Amino acid sequence: MLKVGVIGTGMIGQDHIRRLTTMLNGVAVTAVADVDTAVAAEVGARIGAAVRATGEEVVADPDVDAVLVCSWGPTHEQYVLAAIAAGKPVFCEKPLATTQGACLRILEAEVAYGSRLVQVGYMRRFDVAYRALKLALDSGEIGLPLMMHCAHRNPSVPGHYRGDMAITDTAVHEIDMVRWMFGTEVGAVRVLVPRHSRNGGDLQDPLLLILEMADGVIVDVEISVNIRYGYDIRGEIVAENGTATLGGPASVAVRRDGWEGIPVPADWRERFLQAYDVELQEWVHAISLGGQPLGPSAWDGYAAAVVSDAGVDALRTGERVVISMAEQPKLYQEAAR
Image (tube, rainbow, N blue to C red; front, side):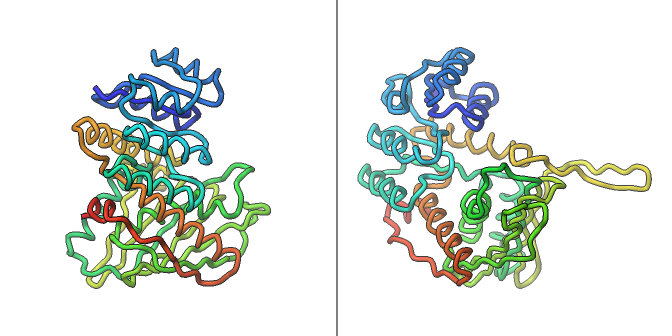
């Protein structure tokens, strides 16, 4: 039984605790901590877990084998570094850290440790539709990929949502996905600004993100975060001999009164519910077998941060921004094979 300590008992933390304690096999939550001590105490009492005063105390707890970091983004670096120092596997919700420098410090610590301990929570790699899309691409049946069209549509966003979050918080999922889908890095990025939607208020919405992959594939990502009708994720790969299109989550179509339709998810939790389950079950399984995490690595978290920052620069300047990254350590080159 893998004993997990959870740092951060807010919305995503409690959602993960729910799946760890009621949905998944071979795992127990043994300790929790949160800056809101009252919430942590309530969650701990509900699931029978010890409540620690700080995230560092969760990491140090001898009854914790592995750590799940679900706290506020700027705290991720300190907790991930603490887990590495303790030699404990750590699953960190995205972002890995909020700056490139912080991501590099995590890379350096993990390389010094000598093997992978970190997995970052980019759940699209675990979604059944995305996995089917990648399988169709990797099979070679449609030939070499040339382009990919993506859409990331939200019905609305909260009031604190800033313009650059369309890239750093929303499109960052597509940024990680296309690196995994095509097995190569992003070489350059541009952002086009279409006509402004009146639903966006002062927020520039929508945006069109253009990613130039290192192998020549061009990816466009429509980012519409106030489109009202629902949470809609789309993807189509255009290749030499055909196309492959991302399937939707709906398994039923309704026909009535001369009308046919399929349900559209209300939000990201509904759309990717099963992907979160698979993501954590596979993490638990890999760690329980004494191995390294197999999902998105600290290098993937760093790469997403670099491309996101370049996207923000492209949005601000209107220019094409060439991506420049640190040399990839051998640890991550070997893990990618």
